[in-house]
Image (cartoon, rainbow, N blue to C red):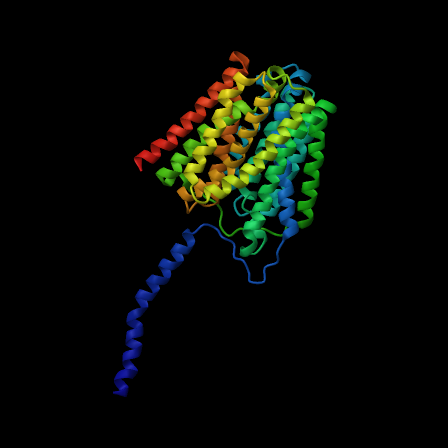
Amino acid sequence: MSDSNTYAAPLEAAADLPARRGANESAQAAQREQPAQPAQPAHQIRHWPAVLSVALSAAAFCTTEFMPVGLLRYIADGLAVSDGAAGLTITAPGLLAAVAAPAVTVLVRRQDRRIVLWALGVLLVLANVIAALAPGFPVLIAARVLFGIGLGGFWALGAGLGERLVDRASAPKATALIFAGVSVGMLVGGAAGALIGELLGWRWAFGITAGLAALSLAAQLASLPRLAVDRQIAVRDLFGLFATPCGRNVLITMTLGLLGQFAAYTYITPFLSRHAHFGGETISALLLGYTLIGLLGNFVGGALAARHARATLAAAIGLIGVPLLLLPWCAHAPLQVVLLLALWGIAYGSMPVVLQVALSEAAPRSTEGSMALFVANFQISIALGAWAGGCLVDRVGIGSTMFTAAGLCAAALAALALRGLRR
């Protein structure tokens, strides 16, 4: 009996070897197919200064992106171009960011993300300096193109850094802190841009933004740890959001809604000045209020989207469309204009977080590549919206442009409802 057991055990183990080898190979193959997730050691240090430096960079990038919204009429007057042509200062970086987001994600391969972020920070400083010193409109557009490359690369790689710089339990707080920089940048970009343009001129606005960009770069140089990656993003990883019908539908809805938003919002300063007859300082205060109430919309939208993402998205788009439809009729009633701007601000303030929740539900396995596609779609929508709005403003006026933008919001709602009916 003992001899039988002595030989049986090795024989059973030998017979089981192929199955175990196959299981190990399957496990290894599955591991290779997983998105790159850098290992976090148990004793990981919390790099909160680095998180703050990324948040400051987010503020600098968003300030630079939205600065022309407040400066549009000053740029148009200073460089002798139309309001629609001046809108190219928003269209150009949006288009380049749309291309740069996926391109940078793929091209940097396994390069230390710290070095890539430093390079993008240098690009941001350079773009603002060139814009401040631009002798003519073509040079200003070239500076905005340069900025667009940095913008797309930063958002594709920097938006998800919170979870890499702190432990997993603190990752949501770190990510929220980084995106708070976005809100600060929007606040400074539009409102402060209008105020600086009124008091000092549009060139000073870009010069001050260059200083902010240099400060954020210095903070990154001092605080960012090494950020190695284990696996480069492949081109196929960029299309995770197209894998499901819901993902495609949310992308279409997002595109139409943002086209309407930026076709009108890009030219809000000329509307408030030439149609509503507000002064420069009042316009600055209105844009400040628009962004502040947008912060409230961010929190409200996030809370509601956690329970009903698609319904909250529909409500946000609908509440953007209502002011667009009514503002041209109420241009000579200051109180009504202020109230409609407040409604518009709270609705758009909720859009970024609501879109992220809706897309995460539609494509729960989205990788860093899908984030790049999301950024690209967002920037294309900004660029095309600003460009289309500029064409309409120059041809039919800002009032008709707002009506068209409201129609795009209605089309976005129709696309969302159509998907709901099919489901």
